[in-house]
Length: 150
Image (cartoon, rainbow, N blue to C red; front, side, top):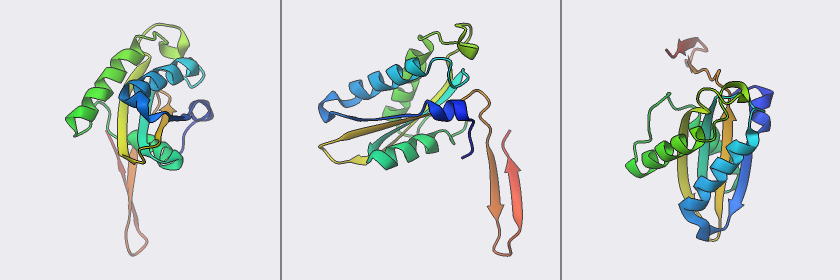
């Protein structure tokens, strides 16, 4: 997924102590977005990956950015986490361009995977407000059909 440098530079990853659980995951996400401040051209789209290993959690976070705007996770427990993070991150009042006006985040998506009980990997990938989606289908004959999302 091509992204701008500013938002790429504020991606973050941490191996949390498993005992911190979801409370620790949420706290890390809020701290990471607060630390990003205006560096990634807010308001942001935030992708969070939890579980797997250090590599998979970052891949999950990037995959989370591919979800459609304002579509919550099909798992109601994960959807509740997305909504809670959305509320908490907007309470940071980073605002557009970091000036404090308007939303800090436009959406938050979370993807989860199984993990080893001894670790709790969390990845955060941020995109600036200009997140765009498109889809291409490559046929067996080499043809390419591009589908732009609305």
